[in-house]
Image 1 (cartoon, rainbow, N blue to C red):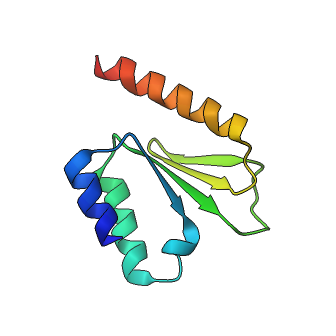
Image 2: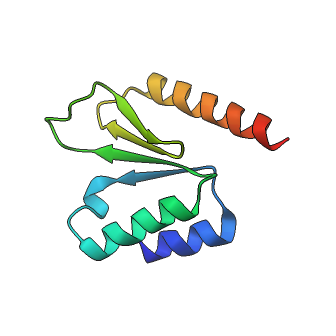
Length: 94
């Protein structure tokens, strides 16, 4: 999580993909990830969940810059999300 924080500060990525297993079981990492998401509103964070009992089909938009997805999302659905997000981001900037 600390490496991600450094990376987001130095290069301001458009999209960051995270696997929930990397931070969900560690309170410190969980807090850092939440802080990173809050501090980087121009970056879309996509968190892949491994839970089998997720109560949504493919993905759930939690905030403007946070999307929770099941790991079963198709590449086609992910492409649509990313294309739409990047189009919006590019038109709102310029």
